[in-house]
Image 1 (cartoon, rainbow, N blue to C red):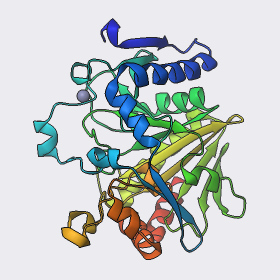
Image 2: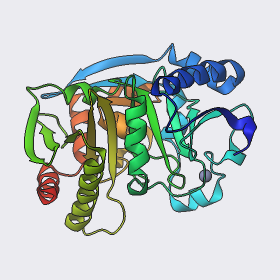
Image 3: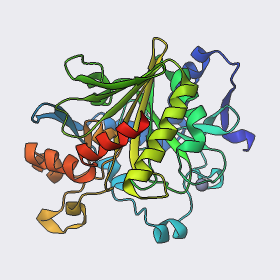
Length: 328
Ligand SMILES: [Zn+2]
């Protein structure tokens, strides 16, 4: 990592408050000094949002034209081989800088934000997007940013626009609706406890949702590994199961929300003309904030379309329950 890229350095011994301050300062700096980033945030001022009340839950829609690149990203192996990796240092825009975190991650501003603060945290070396090897820093980052941010992960085959380069994203806490919904006592249904970790689901939520709450990151890591192994067993696969995960930390507790997926994009994504639904669901969308870069999709999405979309791209509830049962 060349020094001109490094905005500041955060190690395990640096006070947490300094990291949060550094993130805000980085964003201020990049909005001023990097035109693409400045324009991306300026465009956020004119996005449109609306709420759709489905059966038992609501989602928010965000019409955000700047997200067209991500929604339209070609993520198949051939396309990935043919393009330069946009998270590798050599290919970052000249003005882009980041916070070196724990010596192996770079916290970068996302130039096409969904949120008023939106960061991408990428590994400083080119290595495929897989969650399990990075669970320790994932939970550490969630805790370090916990006072005001959440951290989320998109699997290589269900939302990551750089499936070849390990990364997570950061957004303001509670900006993804499922975070608040997961705290609603009327919605919470506990499956079981395992050690100091509670494993729950959310009732009437339109997509099977697993919630893990733990005071112990090491134990939580073990449970996530069991979840991954259980999903592989039930689905008969060797690769990482398709999943999106959102993690928050407050009052000494990690709350990890996991959506297990059956496919990345709905069939209607690949249709043409009026039949095409141009949404590419990842953690934010399945978490209840559906991003539509085209206005016609923003206008068209209604209760049945949203409910069918979740049904189509998430694993069936009984399969998720079977997987959860194996963690116990
Ligand atoms: Zn790379």
